Picture 1 (cartoon, rainbow over the protein chains, first blue to last red):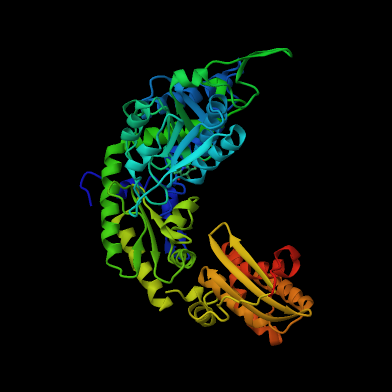
Picture 2 (spheres, rainbow over the protein chains, first blue to last red):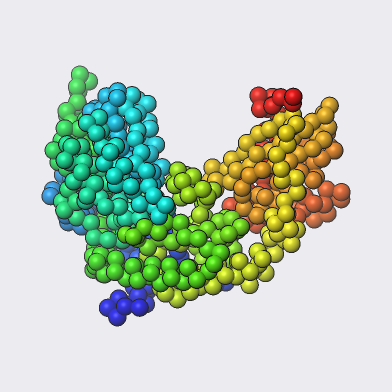
Length: 408
Length: 150
Ligand SMILES: Cc1ncc(COP(=O)(O)O)c(C=O)c1O
């Protein structure tokens, strides 16, 4: 498909891709839910536990020092990966969900009042809806939702109209997990900043598929999960601009986030540790650092270009099936193909494709409002990664055709 | 190609999915309940007409996969004419069948229940098969859900 992109070689880095499912070679197309892990990451996890493991930030002994160096080294790798100014701006969390909750409960709770507004869009994942609803209940703030159009793009005029002097925070998904839409986030940040409103971006889907530069975007917060980025689960990142993070109160209390504790008062630790209470996911953080190294060796721009070719190919093939309807047809779109088949429920599609070794997701993709908008209970979703191939797209398309045949 | 799936997707399942029985609104229902599977977004509205304690009629509306639609359709046929107590026992039996607790293949006059026995090999799909049944249980139990029959 692309001369410079050796997908056959890349596939050898992923041991799980050799699995067979129901006697068929695995075709893993559920990458938006979670990606598979390259051997380099698996080896790193094992190496940490076999040679370098102890708790971080607290021991004088050698292993503790080694573990701390690796852990902090991973933080630096991630800083460079997203081009943050300083490691103080890289907070380790469990994942995107925890990052949004952190911002809602720390930034939101300390700075929002009754009547203030939080602006999101109609294509958000539940994790970028529910934490704000909880915040609204706590503070009396109001959640506003910018609508989307029928191809699955934010209606920017409406977004602008909803951005008022009452808006105190904007939180938008960078790339939609249900539709694939890549939002014009740079423009969104400009519009919001023009009104003095900070912007949080949910980067869970964007970060595995394209180069992300938080300084170029000028966003105030950026959240992502390690497990969607070829890294381990249980680790993720909240990027925040230093000035904002500095002014924010801690979220959880405990060890590591304090400098001094007496029963009268505790003095909080500096950034980023102020937001990292308790023992973190140590080996997982190191594993995420390794994943970032791995991806950068391939090159995020090369990954983005290859995945676009795959998506174009899959889209073109899908359009040849009359009963198939693609849900999410934005102009700027990442490698996600959400679809429905006339009269065949996505669940049945999912079970039948599985029988052919093909892993797709069937359901509402934690975006029930998106399903409601398109008037479907659920969709089937094939989501691609750079280790997928055009041949796998053919297997998928052939499988879909067989399903249509047996359902008659 | 889908041979291994024959146990799950029997011809009867396809038939009930294509032409669900008692798929209608019941204006004079004595109970009406909405069932929802938050995992997959399947929705069902179940209508039950109870006379004394006998289930005189059951119908449903909604959208779901072939398994949940066929299960609802079969259920409306199976429980009609049974008392509430009997229906509860049938529900329990059905539950044992689809979870694999009851491995029999012959269920006598309740033979239709066995159509969905194949679901036991697909734990992810058991919820699809039981949505209608759980809704029926709730409809029979929940006085609060009772709708008036004018
Ligand atoms: C767009 C988007 N936001 C947020 C999340 C939540 O990520 P996590 O479950 O890793 O916290 C996901 C993943 O499901 C996602 O796709």
